[in-house]
Image 1: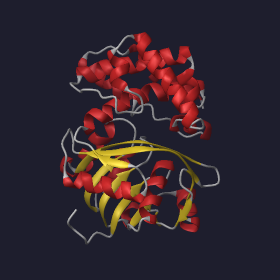
Image 2 (image 1 turned 180 degrees about the vertical axis):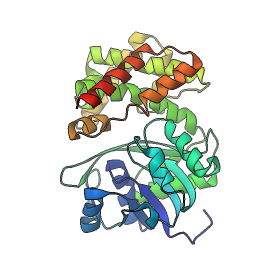
Image 3 (image 1 turned 90 degrees about the vertical axis):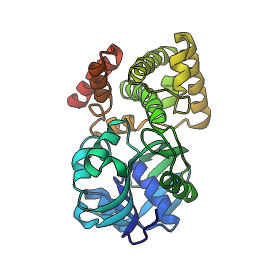
Image 4 (image 1 turned 90 degrees about the horizontal axis):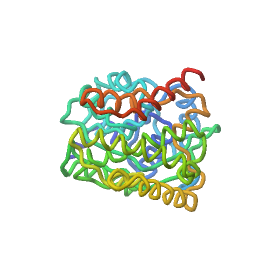
Amino acid sequence: MTRTDFEFEFAILGAGAMGSIVGAHLARAGHKVAMLARGRRAAHLAAHGITLRGLAEFTTAVTTLTDPAQLRSAATLIVATKTPGTQAACEALQHADLQLALSIQNGPLKNEILARVFGAGRVLGALADTSGELLPDGNVLFTRNINILVGELPAGDSERAQQVARALDAAGVRAAASAEILSLEWSKFCSWVGLMALAVTTRAPTWKYLSDPDSALVLARLVREMGTLAGALGITLSDRAILPTRSICGGSEAQAVAIITAAGAHYRANAPAHRMSALQDVEAGRPLEVNETLGYACDKAAERGVSIPLVDGFRRLIAAIDRAR
């Protein structure tokens, strides 16, 4: 990033848990940050700033923009909204002078949307193994700080990816550049589909359904179906994900279940309060990220002639749960 005339160094689209965690750390580190937010959340940020609890405990003021037209320029746009409505939200920023755009949302569809709106040359891949929860009082509970990975799509290293990662990491949100970002995004996505499905249907903390042998078996089958889809798309899976996806897909079903239950023991010991954002959405009455994630996977599978019946079943079940609420 050689230009220095941008109005903001970082513009964060979405001020939920993840957007707030990233924005607060960058602002505290001295970066010029704009949070794009709406309604009560925007009013809270303007009046009180961002307050983090949990892994980090601080409050910081931050510039809050309620109208996308207010953003004139930013070196890096980080999209951290829920996936529904992403295209419309990004199109509202097409007027802005943006050097880079990346998304820490769930699922690979985000990269396709950013490329359509801003041009593929300005888009970096990214994934977050980082978690938090927006609390009823407007504060954010920071629960997991493993890594945000950034890289060129579909693969490759670059100075611009390294600069974004360095800024995040130095600010206190663990981050690194990766030369295999698409592989890692899909590795996370394969595991995330299973975790999301079990979170919504069991409504339990993460460690509980990872530790239970029956739910662990269902999760293993979901991840392995997704692994079949990734293989049909020519994507190599990795164990550097929220679960060791390659190992879950590569061994026997019994070995996969053993890996998942071991992960449950790890979560119970190290992050017993961790809850998937999908579970938070269920309990808060927010729309679920089903069409843009599980729906996207089913659409890709249909295009390639790949059978993923369990994923399709959960897609329909979660969509029904969403409508019933």
